[in-house]
Image 1 (tube, one colour):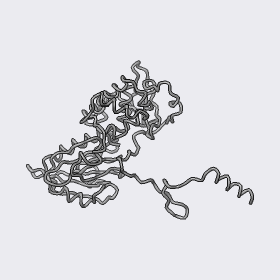
Image 2 (cartoon, one colour; image 1 turned 135 degrees about the horizontal axis):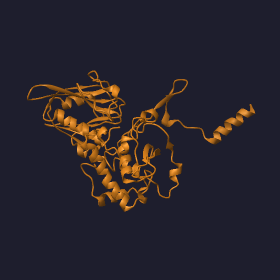
Image 3 (cartoon, helix red, strand yellow; image 1 turned 90 degrees about the vertical axis):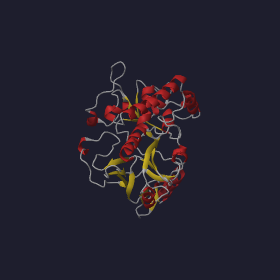
Image 4 (cartoon, one colour; image 1 turned 180 degrees about the horizontal axis):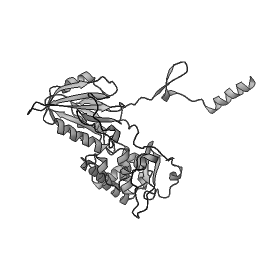
Length: 362
């Protein structure tokens, strides 16, 4: 899922392509799930003919400032959203695999809209598409993006509005019962921090992801404050190019299993010995940590945590924005009646015993 560094990269690309240029055409595809509070045709009409001033990012949300009166487009990538410039490779969440080095056909698959920018100097047109295969992203129109949902419900941005340590410590103390991993993922606390960024921060801060906020020392809070900034600034400095991330980052070693890991270098401890990367589930999210460096002090919960022996831990659905509903999947009964999986009631133990007694009488 694209997190703060990847969304920052997309924002920079938009500014490089479209800043100061007019949007002469907008192609859209109908998608009532992704277009929130606006139809795809209304979205196109609101943008066509206006000049792009600048793209902005806050957390995982980005928006385009346009000239003149009217609303601004506000976007969120969800889990698989990306920008794609015509004639170039799309921006991938991670480094593109070697078998994906060909430029795709145009318009690209899973396109939700394409902006046509015209250069006032030479009249050339550049096209940039918003793609989303899993349709978990969102596209909106807002008059005041910073003071309207979803941005208005977000916490601090580690790049744009990082609080002082005193303010940060107070915010952590307000969530005393939460695990630190769950707190970092809470977008109303730290906007833009997602699964891999949170794990990276905790790894560098030497804090176990299951540690409760009320058990953190002042030194640990100070380390968190510093490492949130360090990870986000370092990742954005290389434009979210994971091949340029430092070799001692957990990100460089956490992906894949078995043969997929054969070309990866081994993460080492300060002693020079190989580190042990383990996976547990914290707050419903798969979490990577180094057991030798991130120790849960005096707790029995670590022994009962679900340790996952395999799997790619980056492929998880994002949490919804506040007040945003994600529908539960549906299944079919034998008579083809559709049932909402979230509403299926399992029989109680007593009812199952009653059924067995009736069967025995027969």
